[in-house]
Length: 285
Image 1: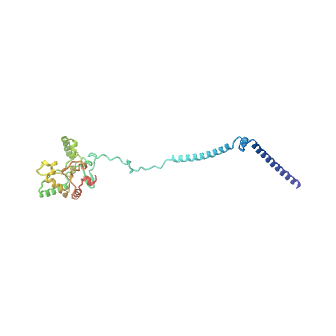
Image 2: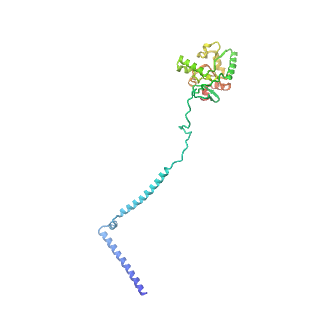
């Protein structure tokens, strides 16, 4: 037991001596540092060959490198996701500027397969032609209405004559070409329809004059006759309208024709007459 106690005392003394030695050396070192104006950082640099600042810089650099590596990995993942094909987008056929269907072919007598109806009304004008083979002949209902109107005009002392009604495509071709030869195309287009564009081809257009006054037929002078004035005031009661009124050439495309009437039926003709509008204006075409 005594031997064991003596060993413990010797170990304790050894640790005390070692601690004292370290303390003395540390003090001596600090004294030396002070004597030679060395800083702890310089001492570490002398012992290990690297400065404290370099150590900190290297540490920061390593930390930044780790951050940059993480960011780069994140960017790479995002780029890979962006390169993935997107779901296909169906085209919007109704979008403005998109061409969902082929353009409608130009309307000409040769391309038209059927006549054009707007609100149930057969249309033939400079924009809406008729097919070249459209040939219904004179409309029976329109003829019956005209006969009734002619009888009413006779009772009022006027003798009416429908001197031109239905015209075929071929007939209109000959007529138009003759007018072009006589007056030139620009002038002919003001009073004569090109083939396929004539309202007479519908069988619903009636050129009306006064019996025995052929000099006024299809002439501007007809407007001054009593028959023309009676027609302008009463034709709608029998289903006819004055088709090309004065001052409306920019709308109808034709000069004032006091003799040209179009059959619409009593109800519609009365509405158009009372509106003071041309057929194009009334139908919005």
